Image (cartoon, rainbow, N blue to C red):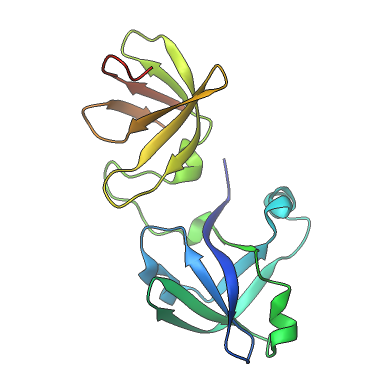
Length: 176
């Protein structure tokens, strides 16, 4: 089970005091105001974070919202020079800090690598990504080196079992 969830990516500096601007990858930006600590890593360091070999935890000393972005300050990062090394890094939280889910909601990392079957139990492929957009999220399922895009709506998604890593779908002609 994945223990850490990505919630944002740092894209630039904001101002001259070491503030960092990030783009959220979570469904609820209000969740940032609840955070006191985050994990800041380069994408290639995720495995080390997951194994807890290195402490990437940082304390947040200030947070504000700017249009569609989140601007925050890491305690002890007080200059542009100190902050530059964080640009391009991703922000993660521990699973225990994730917001609770409602019925029929799932954490994206729990969907990744789920096997997808049709209603006749014929294997379609594996989930490799979830495309988040304003209307309906879309499962990206890899089958024979090609991606199939399945909207996450009840008409297509019949069941999701995270424990068994299995998703049952009913597709219309032409989706494959």
